[in-house]
Image 1 (spheres, one colour):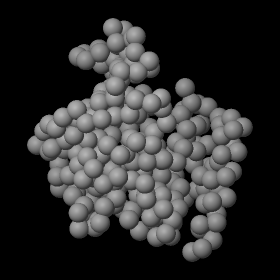
Image 2: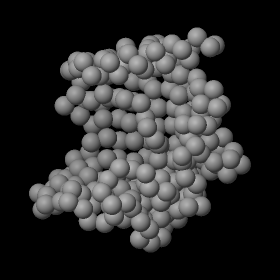
Image 3: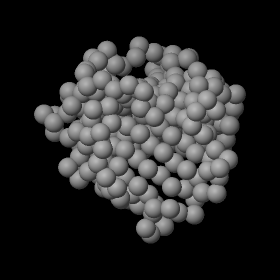
Length: 245
């Protein structure tokens, strides 16, 4: 299946005033199928935040070993990189643009529920608080989506870590007995800062169209016409922002 790294619409953490940022480095893995030896690891993820509020994500695909890096800084720098072919695409947004992109993010004081309030879906399918627990020594809020025709989801988010998701379970309706489930599992959690993660990689800078085409070809595919049109729009924004430097 062709995988294209389109722009990240939202991350699991929330922007807060600088003095409230709590650093962490979490290692997680996306798993499908039943629990136990038959489970299949899809992706391993490192997700981190530093004391300034900069955010870092590194996803390593189990099948191809593709390594995707995303870095978002509080100064408005957005970086996407593909380590396998050592290319990156980046954009420096103005403070106003950066604030606008993040204006809809909830604050941990609201227990992360508002993060899901505007996700499209039938009435009554939003997540609600089902309890509070401890996960790796950190307090988490358990959010449950009511049973729906398609799937049931349970999410554990840590308000003290800006709402990062530390665990997630999704079971698809009518297929649980056949292993129709996916899970995000926490492997390790460190409440310390790793400054080395928050330096942009020294890869070759390319426009979004070249970056995403390289991603497609890495997986043995080619972008279709709709993707190419989307990439052209991304390139226009990319060059407009870079011309301001």
